[in-house]
Image 1 (cartoon, rainbow, N blue to C red):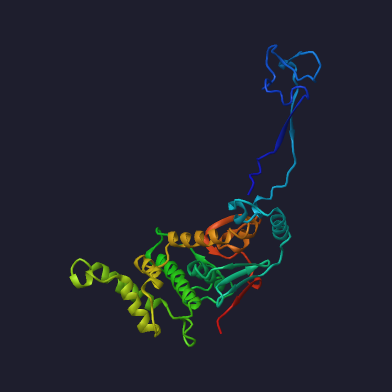
Image 2 (cartoon, rainbow, N blue to C red):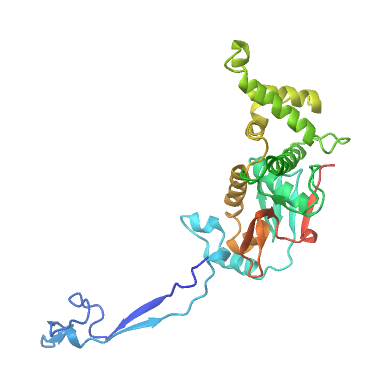
Length: 313
């Protein structure tokens, strides 16, 4: 957003000094410089000391927060399209954000963002949207927001927050990836998350003691678990590699939450300006002016009735 203290101004100077390469500023003492003369006129001098300079303020509309990032990063811009988009976003009011899980897209204001190559970012947005609509894919929380884990909090409280976020995130990812069995919409719950975490941590702890285990990777154990628990026909190791970080860190840490939020914002900011992002991006509680106030609570600012989720059949 354009800083409110910024101003736009224009420097005006007497006509006979304007464009004169010998004039730089009104000098404190007399300083004669050649004046511009028309052809046939006799040469003459003017005194730089006598120049009148005026600083004129120019009114402008601060629209930076309405401009999508794709226009700011482009080498050339279609000005007509830019104006049309800014007008559309400026007049936007009760729009609805649509998260299409089968298509892996997010749509609003006639603009669709493709997340087919960024499932993690879509999963993060989806878990926040499901919480807002009270369809959370975890089993702990009852609120429409998540609490950012505080490492200084008591261990039980810390694990409560890291587990609830991780479980909802993992299940949201599996839902997008079409790996949630219809008869088990909560494939990962608190207990089997803890069991899997303990297996992985045990594997890491035994790594130096057992040469056989040393050749294994935590993600191999993760794949084995998913094949067994979810009855997946095939699991590619790299597909669920993101789980390794969640398991090693005993859930979704505040740092991991920030990483996922920043990745999502980077993708969405290409299509929407800050004016829209304030409403559709997961963030802390907002005050009356729309500024982030309580960063401990992370959720979607939009009302639940302005969020539509299209589920797989």
